[in-house]
Image (cartoon, rainbow, N blue to C red; front, side, top):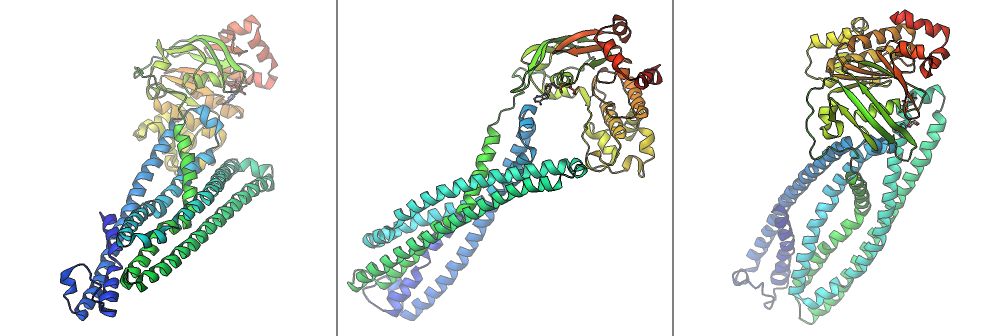
Length: 575
Ligand SMILES: Nc1ncnc2c1ncn2[C@@H]1O[C@H](COP(=O)(O)OP(=O)(O)OP(=O)(O)O)[C@@H](O)[C@H]1O
């Protein structure tokens, strides 16, 4: 409504001037306003009326334009806010295979920056552009009604303008696309360097990283200047063509006025309309780089939204019942995208509350098995069943909600110890959190921290030692009370004392859940109920530690490779 009001008031804008020129200044009887009541008014009354009308129309127009601008801002924010939310949720749903091949910094850039530049362009350029097109069309129509010959002369240069816009606009678009891409790459490089700042500083890689950053930064700045230059050219071209149109209208209009075929007031209306007619085009030229940037941003967002999650819930997926923890891998084969086959006929059954150690040379697919169990990837062949339910028939939340994973590198928030433990069960009571920490062997060191459970951790848990981080992660897993627990190299890089504490915690937890313990540490493996030795994508041998040692196969060879000091660890921990 405000938009239509503003357009109508812009149309009315030059008419009081026309009346004053034709009826007051020139006082030509021929120049009838077409409204008998107005023609009957004395000149001075008409002058006052016109002055009042100017004031009123400017005031009303200001109000309408204010409302339209606020409306645009609200609409833009709502639409783009929703888009950003949808995009974020979509990214979370996309499979690991996608995230592992896409740079996180670039994705962040799309969620934060690309959406912002779309909103900015939408609010400040695209929506006002739509208004201006409405003004252009209505003014062109009024001009044609007033005098079609003069209207045609005035509008004749418009095709030239269209040509310039198409030619320069296309180039601006391409440059902006390159610029967005480069900015995405800058964000990714920054995120990677800052994410690994510990390594960057430790290896003195600062100048090398800065060099890589500078090259991308310079490229993006050059593109930015190029886009601005092209947009400035388009703006100047628009000014020139608008000038040409005004000159033609002035010349031909004056000829018509001299011939008495047009009043001077009509010419003023024409010239005012012309100024407004070219406004959308000039605005478009002025905002062309912004619009192009937003279009490029829109393309990048659309690309992401078109990305399909590889792991999807089946249409018939149902909520898993509470698991007892019996797991069967049946003839599983799997290869990462563009990778060689990692698993080839992997088959095994794990009983509820069994503590199974999964061992084998590096790169044989131990962690991959954990990922498949969680349905982070889809096996290319075979099935995985839990308590007889095929995992691909279950809803993802009900499956993943019953499997807790403790990895080497766990996720920490820059928040209190309490919040970090309660991450997966936000409504857990303090007593439950403490009980989980005790179970994980974390309570003692947490109690010794300055604020105990309320101590705020540094980002990524950087203020904790590796062993402490692991124990908090184990407490988190314990708090979730899942029937299946997966530990992926939980003792990697830990000293014997920490290793012993973690192993004790795992054994405590294994009383309540099925545990799959992926490890290189033969001492740790030797404490499991059963050992699965993985080789060439399948199980090479399995059995209790005693059976395997007695058999003298792969496991006993791996055990024999261990140094005497490590060997002593078996007894120290579990002897
Ligand atoms: N996301 C991935 N994309 C492509 N290939 C991968 C990916 N993750 C692992 N691989 C490859 O798959 C194979 C198995 O990896 P996996 O991490 O499962 O082995 P692992 O037995 O757990 O090794 P480690 O004992 O060193 O942790 C390796 O050759 C590895 O290079």
